[in-house]
Image (tube, rainbow, N blue to C red; front, side, top):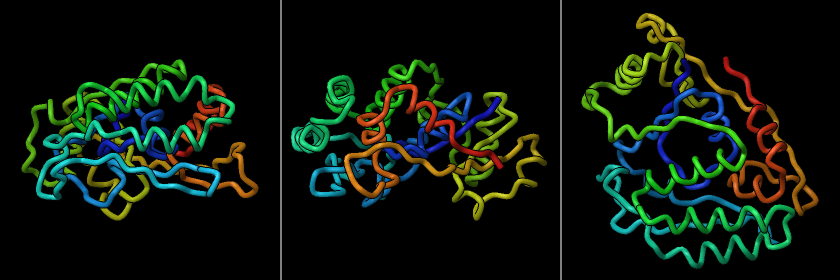
Length: 229
């Protein structure tokens, strides 16, 4: 069984969804510190004027608080307007925009809850069933070093493979995981390209851009463009 763990991000880029796609179980790491000025509550879309950043406010946001202690604001009208104006002529706007509205207005405003709603909604739209859990709801030693926590989570769910983002290469060693019965793999995205309403392709935008421009079959194909090393 393959396990992946990552902090929740709001409509992240396709690489994040490749990590979810590659794992049998995806844990939303919401009992760690909130990262201000990061991508937990923001991302970029492609508007007629070029790349445009959108941000959903997080009242009381602080790096001294856990993600699980914070909520998204209900003030999402401006963000939805930006997305609507950016993609009203996109091929899949009529199907995708209502999904985004539903996610953005999700009643449970906890960061992990809104993000989880988005992941489940998107994979359901793609016809793929994935398993998710929040780490804040699990019983494990949160005071342990980061590597030990990840290995413990693998053991808790019987996972013999842990998939990490490429940045983890500077943090974790395969030998340390294998010594505890876990095969550490790193996911490397292959070049992703798809039609956009622009001359030059703009990579690493929010998954919203992918969904608006690609059929569900094409999105699944893009999610599968990775290697585990």
